[in-house]
Image 1: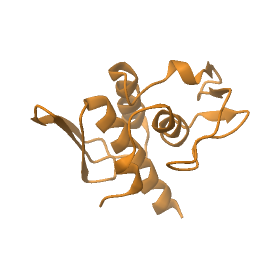
Image 2: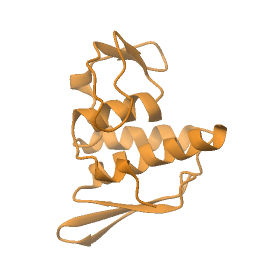
Image 3: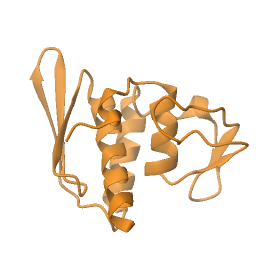
Image 4: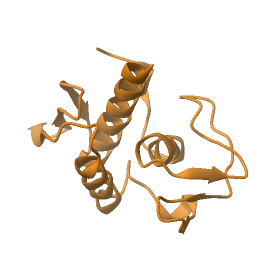
Length: 131
């Protein structure tokens, strides 16, 4: 199913939503994760081990290393299924097939963008099932 998340471009807003909604990091001095088009400033996040993460240090929608951090974190979480595949559709598109509870395909122009979108959609799906 297509959602507003599918239309999000790579960049700080998507990265912030992934940090808060997928990684579970707590925002300090504000929250960004209200939804597409509602970005607010945040000073930094506290990760799950209470380490400070600055917004300029986490770019899962544009940095493949950070995107893999997201995949690894989701694979460790008990509430996501663990199927994940990545394939190139053609020269312009990458498809990520994810079953992190989602059972959908997300397509974007880069692997890291597709991973960020898929992770955010899976997190929204889990939150929707929780109530």
